[in-house]
Image (cartoon, rainbow, N blue to C red; front, side, top):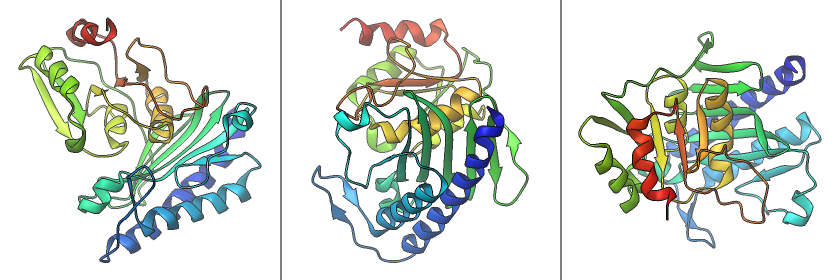
Length: 271
């Protein structure tokens, strides 16, 4: 298995870096912002990164590609895919527009509904998180050697939760209130939230709002290889390409289960 994934992992990291360079080229200009049909924002950076990744993956393998910025294949076609690439060329477009640096390139390989390879690259800091099934999870900063990463043990007396400023919902506020005062909150955009848990800098990311499958797949592989979990609210691991819709259920990313937050979860699972 290791021999099968390592060459692909190198190719995907190279593509993520190339896409990240194109994104930064746009980031440093007074770029225009457009609206897609669903009213979500779109920039030239999304489109440039999409082309680089799409063309590169076509060269690297024969697997089909499902990407946020490309026409979507129907479920009738997709349901027969054993392997496919799942891509968000610019995760955190709203953070990109705000110019706070908290956006990423996400590329995952899905095997029978499970992410088995994942790369998350933050262009502004040149941090690369990557993992593949049975290879482990790693972080590389700029051109320094990569280092193995893993989740930390939960210290229930002070839980570190990660979230996004632009996605504070009423449900999340209720969840935080249930946890009480012994909670540290870190605000950060895109799939970096999941990566912080993977490298042992946070404990829990409750996403009580809508996301799409390309938002989570790459980071899920990294988190799971680092010893963590990404599940729905009933603690079943997220699976991909199982239905027509590409929306995820509400989910949790965490290092380990603990009564300190499991008890608070009951108010959402009993609805």
